Length: 113
Image 1 (spheres, rainbow, N blue to C red):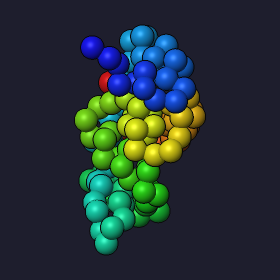
Image 2: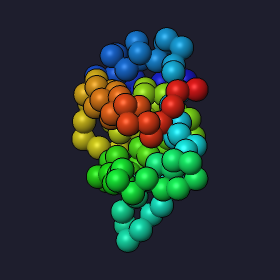
Image 3: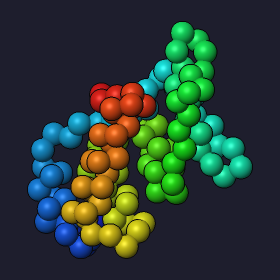
């Protein structure tokens, strides 16, 4: 059976990354996320109240990745999705996804599982 990742540009890099035990990322449960007029709006919750000083929105790729994070995926799985749906090679997709995840982690919107 063929590996779908091997058919992607830069797949050797992604396949090497997939051989390690992946760290999974998921949304922080202390946030509220809603789709409003085609935009994804994310608001952290602090002591039961929305922190309106920290409201986040995403571009279309970020919005799709945010939805996927509901399932607890690894950076490699997210990068594979990006490389499959957009014209970007697997290595660049992984670098971009890792940067996106680091930013989300830094502001507390995701956690590792």
